[in-house]
Image 1 (cartoon, rainbow, N blue to C red):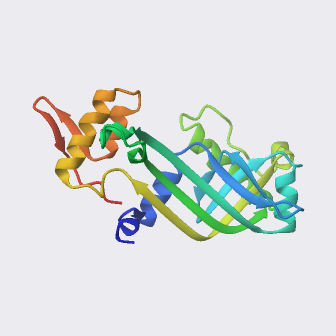
Image 2 (tube, rainbow, N blue to C red):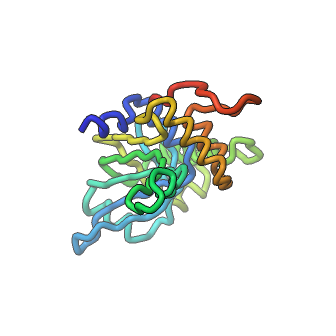
Length: 210
């Protein structure tokens, strides 16, 4: 229980920051037979809600219209840690550094054209921050040609494992091993762990606390 508490993201601001740094989330609705249906979606978190755009017809829309209780999940796998980092032969020692957010909430299909335009513009601002497009207005035809799903969170919980559960010496050693393995993700992972590379080696730049 003590470790689980240390893995929880306690800052709502950090949760929101993480959500909007990620490109893909997964919405879970319940189909007509009672089975969960999980669909990957582009999304934006703004004004205390998740917004997604969709084709105007589809099973997930039917699911939400029938049952507004939905789930939403976003995760980032930072680095797989091979078992031999901890033990020469014990495969159970393999681990993963990650960040994740799980939301339980209420889903609706937005009908107000002003809110639909707001959602579409918010999505464009997230995914195309360089601009170079005409801002969407409520009277535009495109507003009627897409569905907007809005999820209002009832609960929003985040977990992260980026070395904060380790003492400083162990965390530095883990960072060294990650860099030695030299996967494309290694340097970003080490930075996320709050460790910087210096001319004299590795040093803790900040405590990874969320």
